[in-house]
Image (cartoon, rainbow, N blue to C red; front, side):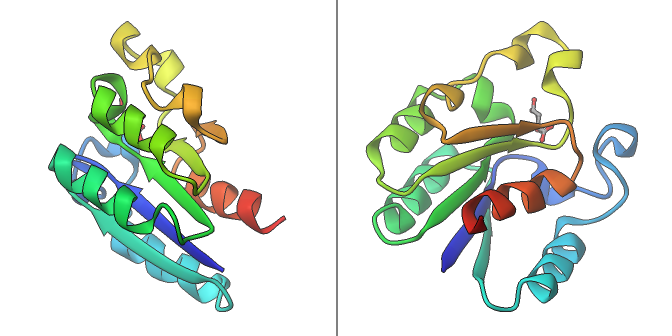
Length: 138
Ligand code: DQA
């Protein structure tokens, strides 16, 4: 089973960025521990701060992989292009947000991804990625 985690802008700074909201762990540390827990899953990770690169990656994996776990970060709230890509591909996409976007600013409460996502996991910290992974396995 091939699953990819795709992270959007500023998530390369996890561990350093606003730790009271996003925690102290870097994503690489978390990803490596996740891979160890699921040795039978082909789990990949891609991060970009560039909207078009996120869309290109979804096109690349979206007719072949079993699942995409997508945290489009700020592009969630702005990108029609990423929303359209989620709709265009065949692979189901689970949308993840580390923080509870519904407890934050109002602009974070709209998502261009949710209408076409298989599911949405919000507010469970980094554990949300594992919950998304479990949703593909079970
Ligand atoms: C985020 C929430 C977004 O509103 C924000 O722009 C992010 C991260 C989250 O994981 O909580 O960069 O997607």
